[in-house]
Length: 549
Image 1 (spheres, helix red, strand yellow):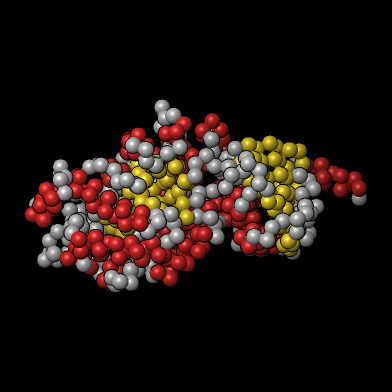
Image 2: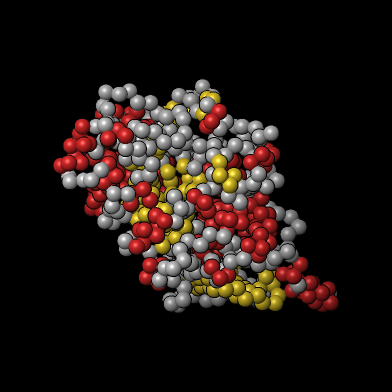
């Protein structure tokens, strides 16, 4: 019997060598030291939490529940400042190395210890621990014939950037709350901490505003949707709509908070306003015009008029938004605002003269400054797309640089913060392989390796300038993504590449190594039923448009 046991222990000590990559962690940790041997999950695992913090207790209970579900082992959580043998330990530390989101993870044959300063660090340490376990840990039912071991190692880890996000456009297509939660789950799994929720646009208004009910009664519905590519000029002749109630939004925010994800709302202005103007035409440049929620994609000329009553309208909306969202940031769009209606408006031309403005670009800056002042007075920070640089940057604005990197560079040179999301690296609505083999997308070409190659900090920045680059974000615009499955198809695995861009130091990144880890990671995504590009379940779904021939 002793010989059999010794043989078993010998074999399990070599388990890390049997897999393609036993340390297939995404994003890649800052430091990982492989150790010999494995930790074997016992028949009755224990999770010891050396803290009274309810967030840590909740995490431990969640982990215990998942272990119990997939392994059938009765897993218990205990509070106490001790390190249990044969168990998983949460240890609080004030080590200066850790920072707000950092953690240490030590796996030995005797025990597993996660050390962090606060709950965020423990949460990210747990994501790493689960990725060291068999992929079945991500399942939704008991897994048979699984050897529940964890390869021994020592990990020190913390993120490169403070802001690591993904945006989802729900204005062009609406997705149920259940999918929004799944989107947040996948964000958190890959150690991203920001969900940018694009809630309004020309094609739909998706957030309930109690003071202005027509925004959803009228603005959330369009009479039809484009079929095929924009240039096909075909429509489905089917009414389309949907919006999130304030109670649903609170539910999503709470869900995200439990996963240490900040939800940043975006309310578009002064352009991309057609859905709002369909509901309240008096805030447009032609109050007598009958506006309709847009049925075509692209940029529309109908924009908000910079009148006092318009500012009161937008401030009322932002007040409700700020009351709902605890995010330090409020995104106000500011992109793609045509100026033709302002050029043709006597009121706007008189306002330009009155305020001593040079042109309509400076009028947009005047508009954004008014909104910035209001948001700042509410104790929040304003984010805008890089067009808000035109005509002069608003005093407290953070720039989201999408038209390349120059917007971020210009913002930093003016001592402003920037979030980098350039189209050529971060727009996940672009084709990821040969368009002839893919469902229709907006255009462009962004393969996985190019996304992975991105470095958010521009060359030539000194240390002080580099601090203004808050981080990186991937953008998922959904004109051509009518279903949640297609969103997943376009987002992953490129979103995982961006997660590593945001977390892992530049000198540790290697695309070949990333691909090897990703192949193992795909097994986890399969358990999570993610329809990533190349997933086995791709063929289960019918996309709105057939593949191009």
